[in-house]
Length: 294
Ligand code: ZN
Image 1 (cartoon, rainbow, N blue to C red):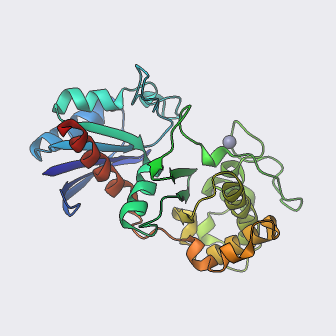
Image 2: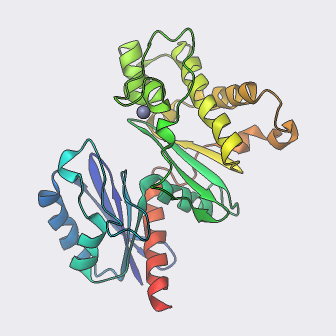
């Protein structure tokens, strides 16, 4: 079996081919231009590779309501050329093989839960902190969708009273996580990219305060058995311990502290990153293939 996988991102499209046991066989990357420019190249590659099924892990938001006529259509995105683009049906029609689609972060949560840092657990939250902030939730052994799919980056949080930035950078919300804690938020607040800020800069305590809030909200609402933090901003290894500390401080003992006895394991890094999304897409392809056989 040859499983095709697409990780559709705002700047690049990563395409991969895996065998039935998820061993990678081939991979390419293409710049994300307009659909008219990029999609035909993607279709040509997948046809050449003779894939038997395809999984798509896409930037969002996407319509993921199973009963909707627009299932698999990209919704309102700042990438205007892609707005309302029928991503799933385009590949289904062009390739004639079973196809599955989910958000890039849901796919990553799936991959980490099946084969990575949360293997064996039924409840895992995968968060990515980079140019944007997003999250995928694997809950009771299923990826969570619902009205659309959760939008972890736009959860509303409290601004720190010492934050020099009054309003976050999100055009929709003055006080959401992405607006206060994404890479562009750090750049806007401190006038330099996050990677150039020294370890002892107070930027990192503030960042941990916001990410700690997001983790505390996750614990209170969806009760994950593990939280994985990936994405460019998390390259700063000194940040993860600060986030753990902040989350515990904000929960303030309300949840049995014994449940957090191993915080290094509870909030940790994804094991498959940066390939979590692509591997998740291959898992979606495998699922689409098996569904067809039923
Ligand atoms: Zn927002």
